[in-house]
Image (cartoon, one colour):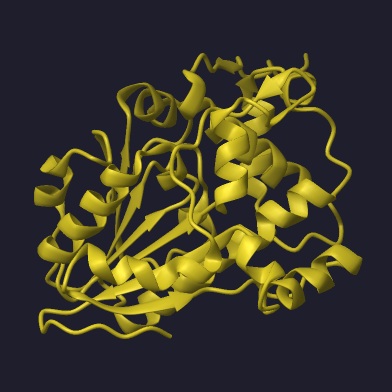
Length: 285
């Protein structure tokens, strides 16, 4: 007798939560490569377990999209890993986490992890990635300050927002940064941003391929505008551009080079780390 295959789990998500499937798919495509820049067996496992037409919906990935996504994710992994070295018992708060599998890539066995997402996304994550003793899933919008009361800041706090803030309104982004600065005066907030030209295309419904159209992205920020983030709250003490590491082939080699070019580099997607301080003061780095 052959072993019965586990039943696949359906994924019926709204426009913005569905983007978690897009990023998961491209991460898994990259992870399957023998020369991958981001080993992620958990992502591969999830794609195989979910009943969803990934390739038909998002199209084939010849390696470029997957690698670009993976190099962006590695920026976040590096920041979390560095935080866990400094604060091994700290708390990692993942806003809009979707089906991100970072916990299985960088967890140190001691940290606390909180996943904050919309109820439909949390419900799917609970079925696919049930929390263990050091993980908690909270069904709550990232813009609802209620989640902040669930965070224990005593051993350090790092907040991440991968692929989230661009779907918020500019005022919501500013308010979220300000609330985090107030609640976590010694914390760090790491997030990514799309450039303004990309945001405009998404708002006009122009980002589509293979029948999939990306949701509107109301908030865009060019990489050379990062200094403006200091105005969100006086406790923003440091603003740091988290640059990608070199990857595979010509594309992987060019990405970190382009990021450092004065004009072209400003028009790229970026990853930013904000450090908050109880002592008011601003600095950029």
